[in-house]
Every structure is written in structure tokens, then in C-alpha cells.
Image 1 (cartoon, rainbow, N blue to C red):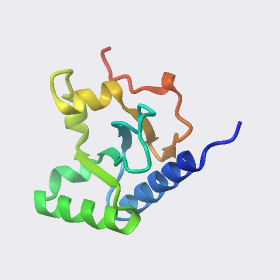
Image 2 (spheres, helix red, strand yellow):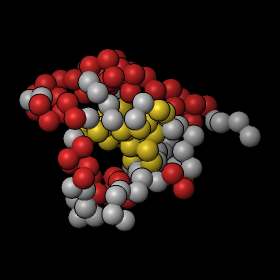
Image 3 (spheres, helix red, strand yellow):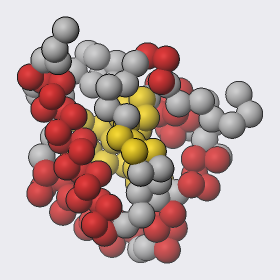
Image 4 (cartoon, one colour):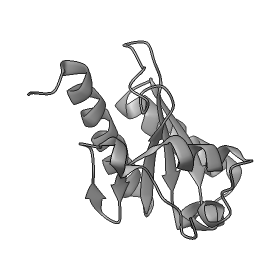
Length: 129
């Protein structure tokens, strides 16, 4: 069975977002979260992405925000990007927002590879679980 136009559009936006980010920073992982990850999003829903990059650790908050806004505006205004470092990911717990993203999100890009045809079984499993 083919993908819906919405699913294709979502995949294209994710790809373009990651490609734009990779022009500026090293992207280790991208996790789709929120209503679109749960399959509950509609045409008005944001596309929520957690981006894991070691480069965020050495950038000022303003520089990170400028980068993320520039990427979102260049790709699609519905993209909402949350920046995290690999250390943040290691420290993710069920009691913090990144822990929620890890528990509920879907990995759509990792270590140079897109994983856009994400199945429920592809949920992120942090080390030690």
C-alpha cells in the first residue's frame, strides 16, 4: 500500500530539515515526537524534531536558536526543532522532557542514515533499558 500525501510531505520535510542542518552542524540523531510521531497529527500540526548534535555544546544559545530558526524558515514553518547534545541524551530520564521524547518518539535519522519508514517497533531504546 502506498504512502499518503501527508506522509510523503512529512518525510520530505524531515529530509530537507536534516540536510540543511548537516550543512551547518554534525547531526548525530533526529527523533520525531509529538502528535505526528503518534500518527495523530493533521495538516495544521507542527513537525516536532529533537536534534542531537555534539556541536550544540560549543555554540552559544543565541547561535543555536538562530541556526534552528533559519533552518525551519528555509524548509517549512511547521518545523519545531529542539536542540540536544549527546550528553543530554545520555542523561534523559522519564522525569524530563527529553526522556518523554525518547520514550514516545521515533528515530528518523541516525548516524548518517534516514529511517523514515518508521514502525512502532522502531522506538528509541536508550542504553540501560
